[in-house]
Image (cartoon, rainbow, N blue to C red):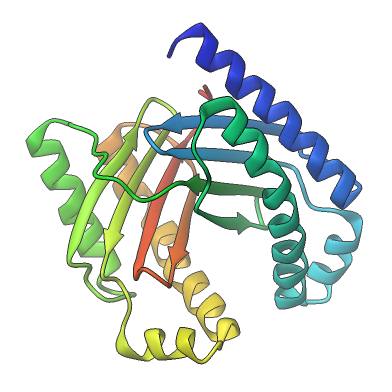
Length: 231
């Protein structure tokens, strides 16, 4: 990564943290920006507000999700103009996922989906995809295609296409987002239960697992964040 790109990412990280603090009344303890091709990844730690803590203590997870989604949407609508000024091009889509138990979250911003793909050792990629198939098909539909879109010492992101069951597509079309939210949590929980299998393959400690969903385009991103070493 060039120095100029790193400086741009640091600037965007600072800008995003300030926007969050202004909108939420609290910014994240850390906010790490990572980029690859047409995608920008934002990884945050220690971000739960006191109001959200109260709701979580009272098992009001859906309220927390709806509140946070509304505020994040407003923040991203401001922030994407900064991204466009720095990198050029617009932001067409953004997705987010949160692990409230570990107080971490990830946001993925992208412009028009591209054919960006990370080239990795063929046997390793095959083993990774087989593991995703082995674990994932216990909890959700087998995707038609898998593609690694980012892989560094800090993060691995895999795009999966054609991932929705007919019932899930219908729930999205009818606006039943609560059902999809709880289904997505169950799927992610399944991956977290099998975290050690992926750690053995990567030979890394996995700090976080996220799944961000694009229901409109029938795809998701499975994202592994590795322990301690951030860009």
